[in-house]
Amino acid sequence: MSRRLPQHIVAILILGLALALRASAQQDAIPADPPQPSQQTPGTATPPAPAPEKILTNYVEAGGSYRQLSNGFGRWSGGYARGVVAQGKNIWNGEVNGQHEFGDAGVYLAAGDTYNFNSDWYASLTLGSSVGGFFWPRFRADAFVNRKWAERKQLITTFGFGYYAAKDVHRDRSFFLGTTYYFQRPWIIEDGVRFNISNPGLVFSPSGFVAVTEGRNKQHYVTVNAGFGQEAYQLIGPSAVLTRFASQTLTVTWRQWVGKNWGFNLVADYYHSPFYQRGGGSLGLFKEF
Image (tube, rainbow, N blue to C red; front, side, top):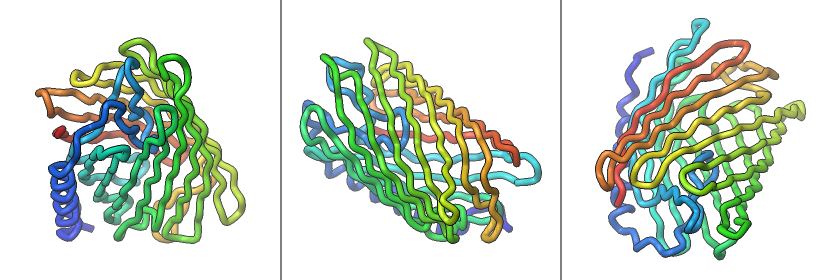
C-alpha cells in the first residue's frame, strides 16, 4: 500500500478548501450576539459578552496530521480543510478530511449549522459521510441543544444526540450531557459524558471528558482535554474488529494568532487502549475574514 494519499483524495481536499474560501468571501457581518459554534468538538463554544469570548467563526483552516501506533498497527497520516462562516443567526461549517489508517485511505465530508434562537438558547446539527476508508462512517449525525445560564450567561448546559453508522453492521446511538463555565478571563472549564449504545448486541459504552482552556481571542487559546471511557467496538480492518475495552485520551491544542487575522493550530494527542498506543498530532494554518 502506497504511503501517499490517492490523487482523488488530494483533489477533494483542494476542492473543499476552495469552497470554504468562496463561502467566507460571501459572508455577512457578524451580529452583536455572535452565533454559537457546534459543540461536536469540545472547547469551541462562544459565550456572550462580557464573558471571555472564544470567537472561532469566519475562518478557513488547512493542515496535515501524523500519528504513530504501537504493536505493529502502523501509522496514520492525512490532511484536512475546514471553514466556518457566520451569517445572520446561523453559523455554517464544513470539513473535508482525507486520512490513511490501518492500511486503507478515505475522505470524510461533513457540514453543519448552528442556530441562535435567542440570547439564551442555541442548537446545532452536523451531518457527515465518507468516500472510501473502512474506518470512516457511512453516515454520521450529531445534534445539540444548548442553554445559557447565570447573570453573565457564563454557564452553558448541553444536551445532545448522535447516530453513527459504520461501514459494517455496527450502529451507534448516543446521548450527551455537558457543561461549560466561563470564568472571568482567561479560563474556561468544560466537561461532558456520553452514553453510547452499540448494535448488534445492545452494548453500553459510556465515556466522558474534562477540558480546561486558557487564553484570549486574537492572542491564543491553549486547551488540555482528558478523555476516558469504554469502546464497544473499533474497526481495524474491513472485517477485523476490536470489541469491549477501555481507552483513555489526552489532547493538548494550541491555537496561536501570529498576525491580526491569521495563525496556526497545533494539536498533540495520545491514545491508550489494551491493544495499542497512539501518539502524534496535527498542524494547521488558519485565516480569519
